[in-house]
Length: 584
Ligand code: PEP
Ligand code: MG
Image (tube, rainbow, N blue to C red; front, side, top):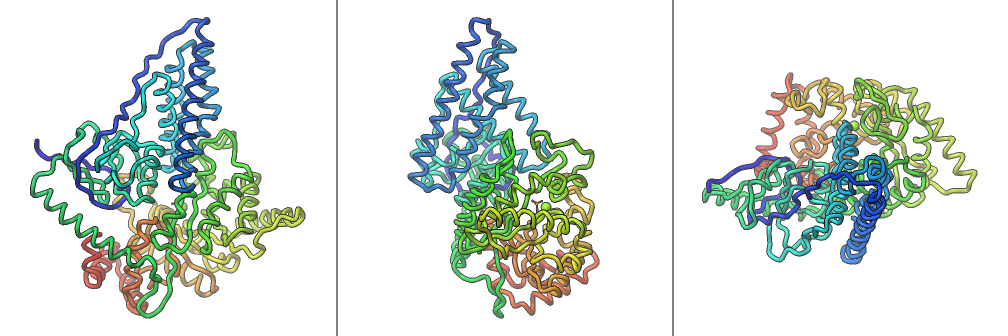
């Protein structure tokens, strides 16, 4: 058979070559059948039993998992258990059995499809991908309904590259890591749980391959390149040897990077740079430390608002933040307040469809519109601040009056806590994200009111260059080294330095080693990124002199086009880090 190459999404870096193991995750085929009045009760009972059994199975995994591997991943299982208690899913199915007189399987399938459709309408990629949790939980209940056993990754005896339609978090939790070389799935995105867990376990993975399960049989030889999101089935000799070489080189490089873990992120001439991790799930904290990160520079709190019929309570906020800050200790955690709005997420009873959501009631605008939701979160954050070093970060600030309003609310919340005798950090630092050009232009004014800036380049680039960050047709123009972007970055840095406040970057630009020296040269002292990027950026930091970084930034700043700026940066990397440049 001729070799076949499949392209997907790079989910977790690394290269593996091995035999494939095709995990049976075929969807249970369900026939929706009409039932009579008499059968309604037995179908409802059957469904409830299947839900209870599913819950018991997940509880069992949770028990085993907690014992074997610690508590850090329990959060995902909790989400699945929560879904099994979710009104939309459970009551929705029961209602459908009763109202439409369909059997339990048919009713459950229709209910799942209706929920998934709601998720599909969400614009935010991360939130949208949470629909897989619903599908996976639904699939488990369906299997229990029809009595089909779920094949488990815990049963795998030989080393293998797992090929599956999709993997449930429970799969990834139960797998024997010594046997799993990597995984490749039809479904998923960079922000799906599978991808997040693969990264935190350091297992190479490619997702979103569309039809990898149709192209691979158990026993086939496959190459999995998690750096580029590629799977090659039945590689010919030349490809095989080529990847063997790449794999060795990457392994060697990883080992070299690993040596940096305990070493400080310090330039050759002694400037200390703080490298931190961005997280979305509390359990990712451990991975940040494992990769040598010094705390959490961006904790996106949207996850707390997911898969829920009701808004998170103050207690839920508090518990989640406390969990994170205690695990990150003694390092700091920067908690970003809720960044949703428009049609990004369906908050019960509050979401409205907007025709231009990126420019709508997003992030801080939404929170100021709904101070009740904002206050609850602030109280949770403040209470958690009694347990470790927390900083608060406000997203999408675009005008000074927003800060005035936030301060008013913050003072009220603090006053309430004081009155109630609830402890919190009275000195808690407050920062704003600079991710709208307006904020960059008034950085000098904002700097007088806050303790630090964190530049969100993902949005700053989108708004500066007028490029929808999710639109593949204009993706080629999305360019961090565009002179317009660089000038804004420089302006923000000057304002921060003049006011002597902290300056961080937490957008994706901060995690690309190609930009690291330029960012140091522009005066960024803290860079927060996806965990896997930390050692790569540290390598650059430890090998440059600040003097050279400033000179590079100067030269890059003078380039009239992004193409020329990029060439300049690449030439610098080629000259200074030929081996690193080869891996990029
Ligand atoms: C950013 O905009 O750069 C950022 C870090 O925030 P998010 O990607 O969550 O919008
Ligand atoms: Mg942003």
